Length: 114
Image (tube, rainbow, N blue to C red; front, top):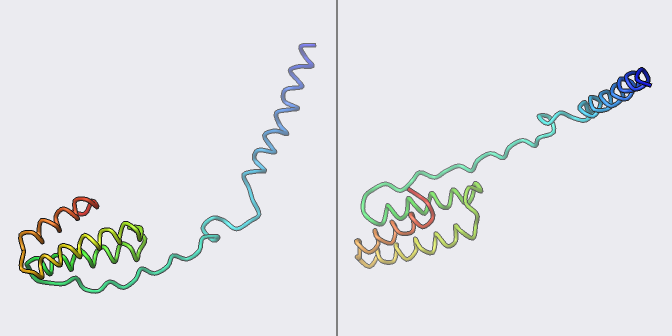
């Protein structure tokens, strides 16, 4: 009986191993050839230059727009961020630079931007 069990184990083990190895090889395309080509990143416009609240808010808005366009930031979050930046821009346009800079800093902090 002992001999039968010892010879039975290799007889069952070999087909199981062969089936497992056969499952690893496929006749389909490799993952590298099956991947779709990556879409080209949209061309980025130059960031607004200058100092003061206006250009700072515009630069941040350009980064947010780019992040939404590339999928690094989802659109609903981008819309909320843009609304916060619009409030900062309104304060800046009204000559309330300190308030505008504070609103900009708060918005960037809220959404995790440096």
